[in-house]
Amino acid sequence: MRTPLVAGNWKMHGSRADNARLIEGIVAGLPARAADCIVCPPAVYLPEVGGLLAAAGGRVLLGAQDVSAESHGAFTGEVSAAMLKDVGCRYVIVGHSERRTLWHEDDHRVARKFQAAKSHGLQPILCVGEHLGERQAGRTFEVIARQLGAVLELCGPMAMADALVAYEPVWAIGTGMTATPGQAQEIHAFIRGRIAGENAKIGGEVRILYGGSVKPGNAAELFAMPDVDGGLIGGASLKAEEFLTILAAAGR
Image 1 (tube, rainbow, N blue to C red):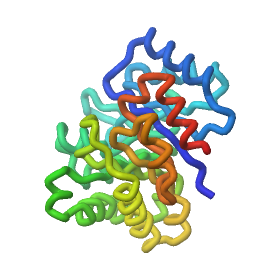
Image 2 (spheres, rainbow, N blue to C red):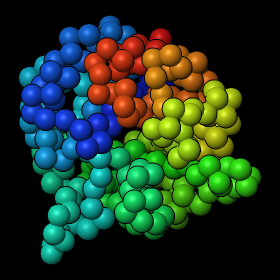
Image 3 (cartoon, rainbow, N blue to C red):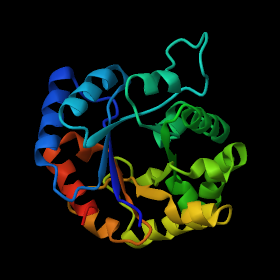
Image 4 (cartoon, rainbow, N blue to C red):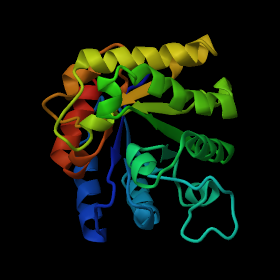
C-alpha cells in the first residue's frame, strides 16, 4: 500500500524568524496518523531549516525546490545534487511549471536534473502538467506523456523507483482554479499506467501527488481518489494550520 505524502513548496517566501515559527507550528500540530511530510524552503534556508527539523525529531523531512543538472564546475548560482545531499536534503522538486515556463527549462533539461538527483541519492519529485490552452486543445495526455517520456527515455523505468511524480495542471497553480477530483484521477491513472507499461511493479508503487490550489476545503475530496497519493502544496504550506489540515486529510 502506498503511504500518502504531502510536500510543502515554500517557493520564494520566508525569513529565519518566519521559518522557525512555521516549523514550530507544523511539528507541534502533526496528527498521529500523519502522511509522510516534506517541506521545501528556499535554498538559502535549507541548512537552518534542516537543523530545526532534526531537532524536532525528524518527522518532517527536508526537500529542495530545484537542483542543477551539472555535477560541479563553473556554473555560477547553481546548486548541485551533492550539495543538497550534503546539507541534509532527502527530496528535490524537478521540472516545476515555474521553472519550465519562467526559466524555459525543456523536457531534456528536466530529465537531466532528475538523473542528477537520483545519482546522488536524492528522491526527485518530478512535476508534469499542461497549460490551459493545451487542455482546451485536447492535448493534455500528449503533454504529460512527452514530459514523462523524456525522463523514462534518459533514465529508464527503474529510475522511477523511490521517485515521485506531481501532476500540476498549470492552469490551476495560484489561480484559485482546481482540477476536479475526477480530472485529477484521470491524469493520475494515465501517469501510473504509462509507468506501469514500462515496469508494472514500479507503476503500482510510485506515489503520484496532485498540485494545483490544494486547500483545506478540497484536500480530502482530492486525496480520496484511488491514484492520488497526496499533494504538492504551495500557498497553503505557508500557514501551519492550513498545512496541518491538508496533512490530516491525506493521512486518513
